[in-house]
Image (cartoon, rainbow, N blue to C red; front, side, top):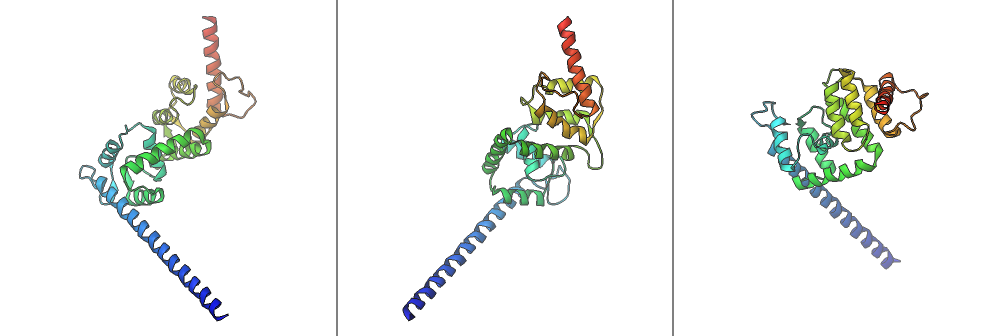
Amino acid sequence: MGARHRKRRAEKSKNAQQSTTDESNVMDDAKTVTVAVHQLFERYANKPADNLGPDRIGPHGVFALLEDLGLAPTDRKVLILAWLLKAKIQCEFTADEWNDGLVALRVVSIDDLRMVLEKEERILEKDTSKLKALYRFTYTFGKPEHHRKMDCETAIVYWKILFEDRYALLDVWISFLRVQQIDAIKSDIWNLVLEFFEQVDANLSNYDDEAAWPVLLTDFVEHIRKEKCTVGTA
């Protein structure tokens, strides 16, 4: 009994030491990631030309970041980055947004960030729930903070970024908005446009005239039908 008891105590002591070592390694790893993320932040933050005060990446810093990532400002991955970091202001990142976001993503270099953005973009092509989350974020992110609506031309820019080559009706929708001289997009319209594009075929073959779409979208359907009739009788 004595030998068995001593063996059990030795095993417990060994396991405790291993657990302590593992925890120490995790803490060291987390500290390394945090330091690397902060150093990356310092590369782009506090540009004198931005004049934003301390601990912020402003437009000039963001432009330098995009150059390092090899991204154009209108690349969808730029919007994905803002979404992943939960940014609140266009062309800006606070220290907390940057540090919290990149630490959570385990990103410690530009190469890491590039790979994460490419991976997320591939996921968005197949995962509608993630696309919907990015889409809803975009409305709040894209309009001025205290405004209830998004300027229509701004909405068009973001629709092009989000949906390029995804929906056949996108160009027709944009043309319709401009013909109708729509000046602003409400949040309910914004949200339902994605549902419309996801649910309704480009030829309207499955469009339900009894469905409760908002007036702007039902007018859009009538616009398409009239255009088809005009082409058919030309």
